[in-house]
Length: 446
Image (cartoon, rainbow, N blue to C red; front, side):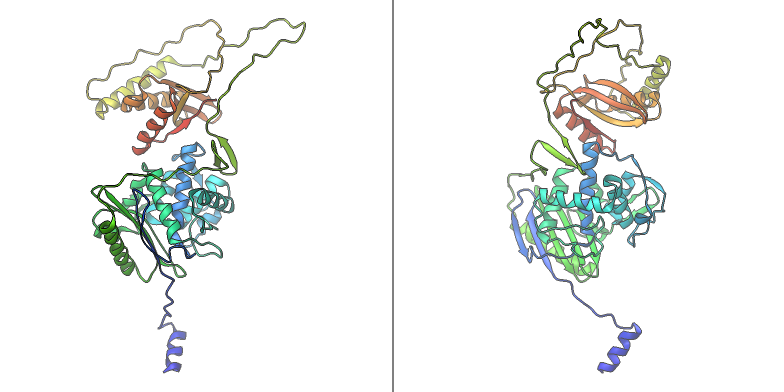
């Protein structure tokens, strides 16, 4: 019999079943309280749960202004060669970041995850270092990342506790993107892709995410979140033996969580990660100061014997009033037809450019007040930027009322900015626009 079994195995008729180690964790997402755990701190292969961190950093990079959802990412040979599951990207292809994010979140595409990491950090190795810095800042003390996708690699390990923490941060730190994980399918630039978690989403009441993972070394993994009434539970399983048994176990754990969680509990969101000590925030390999204040700005003194010259020449952009007024006309028409306002839009006064006397522009203090702004995209023409600004102003009038619409020309195009906002208003406006899939990032005082 042993000889027959060996022969069948050699011929491929029998596959040896090697069970991956099992681990589980259940928390009340509102408070972070642990409701159940088993082997929660055992370091295991996370598989594609890794992509939660890849996506978290992508959202962070967009928030910090390092990249936008509309940035065209060039796919490298390395990314295109990643094994399945994949979107099917080709080397040299250019694709918007938003489609890579959708593919990584919904399809769990390895090629998309690698392309995201390379676009943000320049290489997958550099991106993995950023992943580890972020994991440390989030309190994921038993996690080490080696790649952006989660395919088995020596030393690429995490725990049920750490991945539960990761899922909770995704939920609360970037709620404007969380809907990605509940989509049963989505368009990813190349084709429509189905959610790897669609069975759980369709069978468990209240389930709305988050991420599946599978490799032979890891087994079938899942971090799942479900909401019922005022209660929200996150459950994590490592080492499931199949999709069906894993989903059944996660459903049991979610039921246990809803049974044990109190109906009413104070919401205590997890703290945002702090890098290198507040108030600095790590961006890739650089450190960007988030909040600074210029206490004094001295005017340069003339050299002895020099004649006085005008302090500053006025910065007057070359503007075509007819083109901009045309853009205003188009934007008003679009706003009216899309019912962006409840009544007939009030036509802004036409833009008039007059000859001006030279003015001295001095730097405003950055100690507080309305010295923040937001950027809603970069365009190939001033006309397109002005049109987007007016359209956005009409659709987001509550937060952008009183702000200054400003087009900034550079060698790379025309940036559409709203200036003259407080930091809180700028953050709120960006979050509301991003929730409607409009690219936006904050501009700090400078």
